[in-house]
Structure formats: C-alpha cells, structure tokens
Image (cartoon, rainbow, N blue to C red; front, top):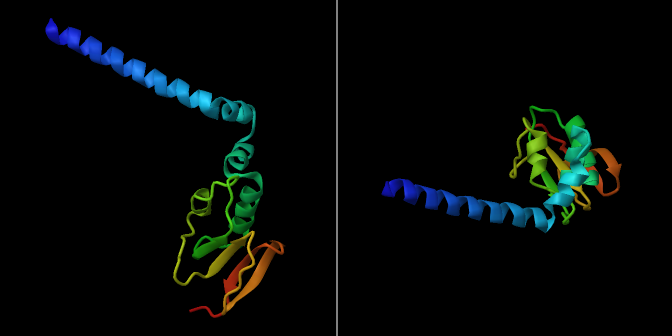
Amino acid sequence: MKSKVVFKIVFFVWVVIWLHFFVRELLKGEIRDYKNLFGRSLEEKRAYVTGKEFYGFILFCKKIIPEDFDYTVEANYDATMDYFRFAYYMYPSLRNLDNPRYIACYKIKFAKEGYKIIASLGEDKYILQRINAN
C-alpha cells in the first residue's frame, strides 16, 4: 500500500517537472520554429534548420566532392548556420583535418599550397582540390 502511494507521488512529480520543461522550451521559441517548418518539404526543412545559404553550399559540395574522398572545411560561421550538419550531409565522405583531398571554403578567402580551385559558387564559396594525388 505504501509503495503505491510513493510511486504515485514520484510519478506525479515527474510529470509536473516534464511538463514544466516542455512548456518552457515551447515558450522560448520552438513554437515559432514548428510553425515555420509546418507544410514545408523535406529539403525546405533542412534548409531552414541548417541555414538556406549554407545548405545550398552543402548541396554544392555534395555534388563536387566524390563519396570516397575526404575533405575538410574552412569557414567563417555565423549564428544563422548549423555547421555541425556539414559532416552529417557529406556522409559517407569523411572529414580529414590533416591532409584532405578536398577543402570546402565558405565565406572565407583561403589558399593552401598544393591545392587549386576546382569549383566555385562565388569568390568566397569554393572547393579546393589537392594537386598531387598522394
């Protein structure tokens, strides 16, 4: 009998705490995000979450960088981008920080000896490829 009462109290407290955090997050702006995502296609949702311009750059990189080669990213990130998603969308290509075959450059002027520009979306969005194929 006592264990049932304790269980009910603990369960009630847990539900109250869960509701508190759920409602608090909705009030902090998630309602606006859910409203903005409602009725959009999967690609539009991805662009909204990642940042429209940055998502376009990711799709550009996905077309240019072959799946079986590695890459790294040089970028000036801002608050409108979810830069952690770059690696997610580029899979199965893997990030290599030491000696990548490709370097994706986003909103940055970047040059590295032994690399040349192979594709560009503008003067500050381009992909470099290693010249020597070690």
